Amino acid sequence: MKNIKKTAGNKFPLTLTAPKNVGHNITMDMTMDIIMSENFWVIKVLQHNNMHCIGCPLAPFHNVKDAAYEHGLDKYKLLKQLQITSVVKSD
Image (cartoon, rainbow, N blue to C red; front, side):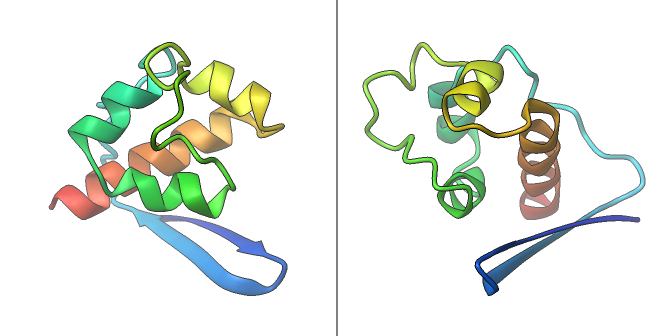
């Protein structure tokens, strides 16, 4: 099991635990709109990272890489957080 822990100013810690076989149904080139519509649990990850993708006019066009770049986030960490949340919450 791998843990990812991130805190926003020591408030509201977000800890995600992935099972050994993490499903990789979310990919780097998927648009944020598709990701949010297929699994609404990822919205918590986006909000935690101060990403307000819900209702954003660019959500249908920005993929994970673009969104991470625009918000100054590491694209691989964001992708892993989205994947872990998708698997954990869909069980």
